[in-house]
Length: 442
Image (cartoon, rainbow, N blue to C red; front, side, top):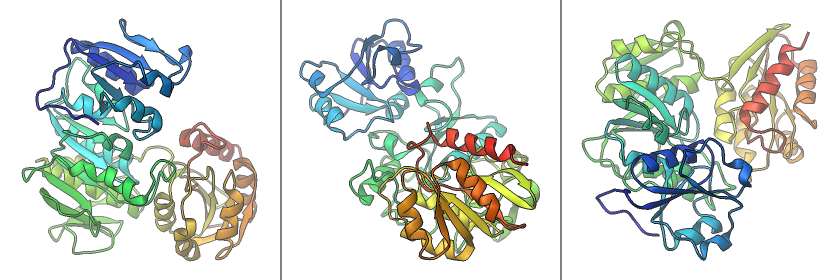
């Protein structure tokens, strides 16, 4: 695969954008603005090309066979397309390949706080954005959450700093992207349907540090194995008081002093959200923002939907929507953060993960597990070795069964531990269905 030169210009060049979604459309518009001729390619039919800027040539029903006569100066790849798939590699043999986020970074000269991790990225990205805005730096949330990076650069006012969520898919194609502050929240196996090994997945995420220098900063969860890093490292933890930032879930301590009362100063709850808050605070402090501004920004913040979202309390039982938990680490965090006994609803698409790591968490906190979806039967068989488990076909059945067995004072927790594409369009759809059914209970 070819690499880019130090000097980057696309004026007069042919940029081929792969993927007709929002990121692809934004990248195409940015390339046009910078003087390139642009084509857009997608495996879908003509109907997938929507809201394209004038002048973009479209190519539908993309196949490997199209690579034989393909010609372009570079390919800009949307993050949802597998970089290492045979299709992409067939085109990348003779053409520079660049992800949309990397492409956009070539035209941005403001500050970047880059955020990665298996779980908690979106909440942390929102928190960082709020703090940057409070400090007068705009702090637009973009990348894997918010709007595509390219879209930010098409606005009338370019932000002084951005809060950039970076998935492993976006980091795969990083060559020059350099965050001033990078945040590493956590790591756990995920996306094993895309990566051949856990190490390959982790190596993709580690690329967030690739271009950082001693002038930059890394914010990392205490105890994470990140290898030798050039930037200064600041740590946070809910388990070890040796970290620079520490929390018991109620307060955040830095330098031996309480700098935030989470329970009275924010709407954040749970140890996992305490970690997100510490990471955001540490990142913005490293960016030069004072603690008073940071704490003011966090007041009244509520986590995004589908992340341990309290839907209602009925007959003394809480119903929590944690549909965003599409991997095991998120499921473990959700269980660990609960203070009530739990009736767990889990299941969905088979992703090839080792669910045995969840068993100790089930033993400590869960009264019963109800599984549904494609992975329901093997999941119930495994979980049934430590807690009572049953299998149903649909989420609606799971909710009604959970209600029947949940004692007063417990929590019914939808935290699937896998993706939703066996029965739903995405985790938002799954969470919305859960919310609708629960709100109709009487």
